[in-house]
Image (cartoon, rainbow, N blue to C red; front, side, top):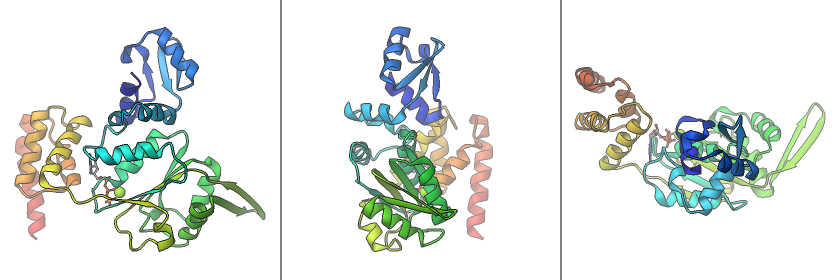
Length: 283
Ligand SMILES: Nc1ncnc2c1ncn2[C@@H]1O[C@H](COP(=O)(O)OP(=O)(O)OP(=O)(O)O)[C@@H](O)[C@H]1O
Ligand SMILES: [Mg+2]
């Protein structure tokens, strides 16, 4: 039941759901309400109050799969991440080429811990902006994307303080404020070399490699169906096959192309798009 709810929340961002939709009665809903995980509103709806508590319960039950409904494969990584939720000071860095799933993992970690996490794109954030955000939200989980391409390399000093001592110090309007960060940092990067060594060293590094053609086929077909881009699995598989056969092997491109195909009649249009894409590549 909780699994179904968290899946809907992660797939579609649904935080409020009729209790009948997840097949429970009012009494059970009241128990969940008393546990503080979900809030029963008007005897009809349940609201997800603490994604992190639900996620931890599912991790405890070793039900890792519903926690990552948008990520195909990587079962070992999913388990590792879930186990890390119960630790403090265990930092994980995902390193891999474009479209290998780094942001997908960071977003999932954020969504699973929304009530105690922040997600920051380091390539777009000043050190002061990062500190402000941390001070306002005082998170236990920090998801830092694009860690190898900082907007301002001085952000590494800020991170160094956080990772080494858990110290967050802000000086503003002639006042100094500070608080301690006690939690985990999750990062994403294309390469590790451009990240300062003492920062890199404080992470457990997980390398995500380039996908094989078969993996691309599986990931894109599943993604097209799951996200409702092409609900018909047969049609989704055909679209993916045509793209791959035409030499289009970028996951992002295949998913974009899929958005133009709503029915079998759109296959003609699909052929034209593929032709255009190939032409552009030849120029
Ligand atoms: N294992 C996977 N399961 C499902 N979808 C995936 C998987 N890996 C990649 N994708 C899809 O590929 C696209 C790119 O993934 P993502 O944004 O996580 O890549 P990235 O590693 O962060 O790339 P970049 O280095 O460019 O930031 C997403 O749209 C995602 O849906
Ligand atoms: Mg990314």
